[in-house]
Amino acid sequence: MLNNRIFGSLEYYVANTDDVIMNRSIPVITGYAQIRSNIGKTQNKGFELTLSTVNIKKKDFSWQTDWSFSTNKEKIVELSAGEVDEPGNTWFIGSPLNVFYDYEYDRIWQDNESDKMMMAAYAGNKVIFLPGQYKIKDQPMVLCDENTEGAKSFTYNGKKYYYENNGFGTFNNDDKIVYQKSPKCQFGLTNTFTYKDFSLGFFVYGRFGNTYYGLTQTIGRRIENDTWSPTNTGAEFAQPTTASRTTTYDYVRNYTKGNMVIVRNISLSYNLPKTVLRSLSAHSAQVYAQVLNPFLFGGELVKAGINPDDITGWDAANHIGGQTNNTCITRSFVLGVRLGF
View 1 (cartoon, one colour):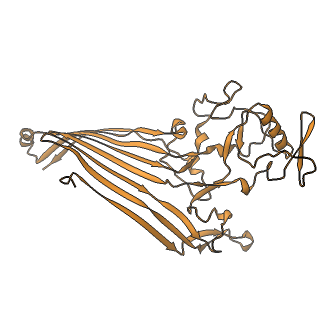
View 2 (cartoon, rainbow, N blue to C red; view 1 turned 60 degrees about the vertical axis):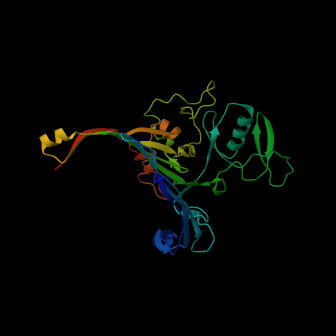
View 3 (cartoon, rainbow, N blue to C red; view 1 turned 90 degrees about the vertical axis):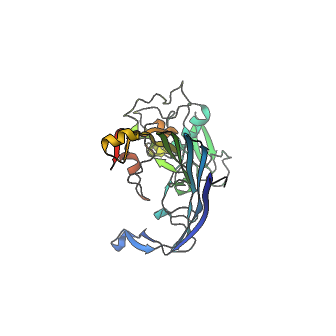
C-alpha cells in the first residue's frame, strides 16, 4: 500500500480447548487435598494487529513506526459438573481459569453520622470498624420497621434501629467478586529515526485491564502523606492506628488496576565512516548508547513505587508473590562498540 510504505496484518482467532487438566480440590478426608482432573472446556478469542509504516523516506532521513496490538478474552465454558461454578477452586463459568476471587474495596470510613450509624450496625455483629479505616463493599443497609420479617436490630446513640436481613452486616461469598489477572489488551510501539549515519529508536510497551494485588505492600517502607485524617478525608490510604478494631479485611486494599506503560529501550547509534573502517580492517563499526527501562507510567500502583510488570508467585490460590516478591524496575545505561570483520 502506498508504494510499500504501509503494511501489516489483522488476525482474529477462536481457540476452544477440551479436557483441560488442572488441580481440583477434594475433601481432605480422602487423604489428599487435590487431584489432577480434566475439568472441562475453555475458550480463548481475540484480535492480533501488526502494522508498519514508513512515515518519512528521504535521501538522508527516514522515520519508520512498527506497532502491535492484541486482545484476548479467556473464559471457562464448562467444568466437571457442567456449567456450574466451583468457588472453592476459583473457577467460574465465563471467567478465565486464573483469577482472584475476593472482597472488594469500597472507600474509607468517614467520621459522619451516616457512617457511624452503619458502623454501629456492624458492631452488633461483632465487626468493629473505625473512621479513617478501609470499608469493604457489602450489601446495602436498608432500615425498616421492627415488624419486618427477619429484621435485625442495633442501637445507636441510645436508639434502637432495625434493618432488613439481606446479607448486610456480615461478609461471605455473596460479597466477593472475580478479578481478572490477565490483561485485556496489550500493545507495543517501536519508532526508528535515521539521519545519514545516525540512528535513534525507542520501544514502548503497555498493557491494560488486569488487576494487581499488592498496593499497600510498601506502606511502612515509604513516606506516605496521603493518609486519612479529619482534615484529609479524601485520602487514598487509611489512618495508621493501634486502636482495637477488626483488621480482617484490611488486605483488600491491595487490589488495584495493573495498567502500565513502560519505555523499554531508547537507543542511539552511529555508523563509523569507511575511512575509519579501513584503518581498523573492519567490515562495519558502530558506536551506540542505550538506556533500558527509563520510564514507567501507571496509576496508584506505580505511584506507590511498585513494579506492575512483576507478578512473581501469582497463581489461583496464592497471590502473595505479587505482594512480597515484587522487584523494582532496573534502569540500565549501556555504552558499546560493534565491530564486524
